[in-house]
Length: 371
Image (cartoon, rainbow, N blue to C red):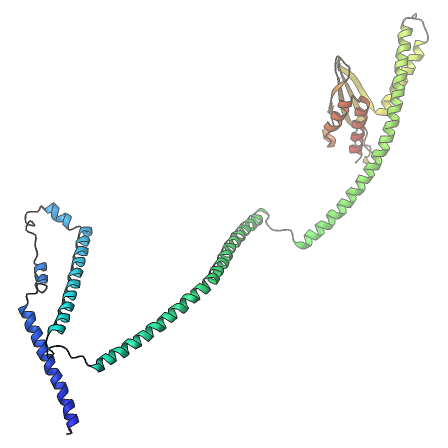
């Protein structure tokens, strides 16, 4: 065995013996020193309050409250941590003092190789720490860069979610409305071909109605022309009736055997019959001093046949007692023809046009019964 190998075997033996002596010395000092921490667990477990025997059962129950027990446990843990910290601090101080004031033989041997190893370990840890800091800085930079994009994506996802919720609500409402429509309109429902056919029929019907409107307008113009002529004739007959009344008034002063009254009476009767035939006036009488009721006959068109009876309408003219002007008018029989002559009555009453009112109402009634 060479001298180098023998020296290498002797060196560990010397270190072991030194460590054994150091351990024995530390054990001896531990036994000689009065450390209270070893005795504290036993005392803590055997701890009992002096006044515990004197407490009431109710107070014992209060001390068993979980909240109170938890607070006491927390206080004890805090106290034990402080004791542990003080112990570690005192132990570190003790080791530091011993390493300074103890002999070289008892002090732990720290060689340059160990220092170099610790330096290398520290350098490696520093490199790892530097790499971790660089990664952390890179992550933070990425977070700063990606945060706005993530926020934008979040806003877009939020808007899309809100739109999806809104569309789902609309879809639910549409399905509900469709279900109601299906319940309201059971089979057979209107299909697209039937709708097209109905549209074509409506177009044809509208064209026919348009033709009827045009024909009604032409008949209305003809009737208006005839009405104007009849109105002028009526005015002439009224003038003649007034003259006849004057003649009758004069003849009443004459003797009873005056032969001129008979021709005048005949002429007046013929004129009145002509007026009735022109305007189809069947009845006219005074309801009161200021109300005149006129009843007219509206003949149906010739195409309706002879079995259709004529329609009768009544017009009541109300005059103001003091001014003898037209104050109002009521009509009867126009509702059966589907007419609402209120606007015609109001417009003619405002201008005090009696002849125009009667002519307009009769024209509308004839136009309605001809259609």
